[in-house]
Amino acid sequence: MSKYLLFLGCVIPYRLSSYEVTARKVLSKLGVELQEMPEFNCCGFPMDPVNHDLMLTLAARNLCLAEKEGLSILTLCNGCFGTLNKTNKMLKEDKDARERVNGYLKESGMQFRGTAEVKHLVHVLAEDVGFEKIKEAVSKPLGQMRVAQHTGCHILRPAKYIDQDDPENPTLLKNLIRLTGAACLDYLGETECCGNPIIGVNEEIPFNIAREKLNNVKGVGAKALITVCPFCHMMYDLNQPRIERAFNEKYGIPVLHYTQLLGLAMGFKSEELEFNELRVKPTELLNSI
Amino acid sequence: MSKMRTVKSSEMDPRFKYEISKAPGAEKIMNCFQCATCTADCPIARFSRFYRPRRIARMVQFGLKDRLLSSDDLWLCSTCYACIDHCPQDVEVANVVRVLRNMVVKEKGMIPLVFRELASNLLKTGYVYVIPESRLKRRTEQGLPPLPRANLEVITRIFGVTGSTKILENVKTFEKVET
Image (cartoon, rainbow over the protein chains, first blue to last red):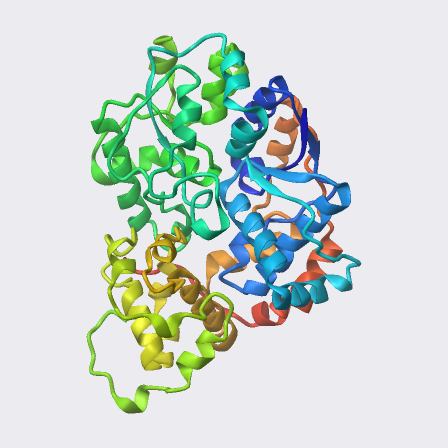
């Protein structure tokens, strides 16, 4: 039985509690215990463009909290994982950066030691729970479902900080999807960014990038897109009607959190899995099972 | 950076590349030999008329500091990090862009509005978005535990000691960046 500190990040409580609710449900049934963060601040990622040291220190503070609890961190967000994991590894290796950041933290009575680990949901599912146990937990295989996946950038790149998957040909999420019995289809441009990080300064470019992905996903006949990051999810679900209007196209691709898909396969009722929170309603998809 | 212009030697600051290469993440900038793999693999460059990571790397090497720090397109990098993984010369291009962004904020006192808003929310709540009451209430209905509380005193102190409070104090904002 493994136990983690759950690092929620900002965007999940702000917009996507559907991801949190379903992640808690499936993890609990799979025997992963979650403890709440004793205190919280943003992982630091959105502050990197403002001041790199601010990002490092905000991230390091969360790592210090985990060290104090004697637990490792589990994130549901790719951005939080990327930032906390990179900072953790950088500060462990780079003495100058560590001393600088510890200098910033000193007044607050904290010191980074490097004793905690950072994992994303998919890593905990693959490494701690394991494929065998997930397979056993699947009571209603989704054999008739054909989906595609979008892994997202920050659990793949920069590759030097991440060793769990191949950034050029990611298979971890595909394999996790296949455990549910669903077919996971290949499509063009699987590793392309969702574009969401720049939506605050420019909408046109992310919309073009997302349009391409939605067309590629639809083109291979996938009936849903599966994500593991709240930012990617917002780009494809929340913004899908707006992208459809911008290009006068129709995609109709429901975007599910992986935990919703896994939840279905594990026998949770669809009412328990927050599908009503999705912008693109998966009515047809759910009727097909 | 949009318009092609003649580069005058008087615009070139020969020390700029050394300054940049001292910043964490930008150490290898001098290794760039302009193969343009970064631009070829950049999802933004495919749709933007302006954003070209290869050109940014060259401009750093040329020391075109003023031009770089006044180019809005620096804010178009989506941090997908494909350029970092694919560079045959180990130049961490996206990190070079981040170093330049930090410089624009600190030295030019300019920042896209969205970042100032995120920073201000973070200082007020610990989260970069102000989570509405209705969401907090809904958490209870959904059977979720209360959100972890933020220690605002520590966050304010971190902004202070890293120099971020001062950097953001008089910063001017702009809203959108052209495609």
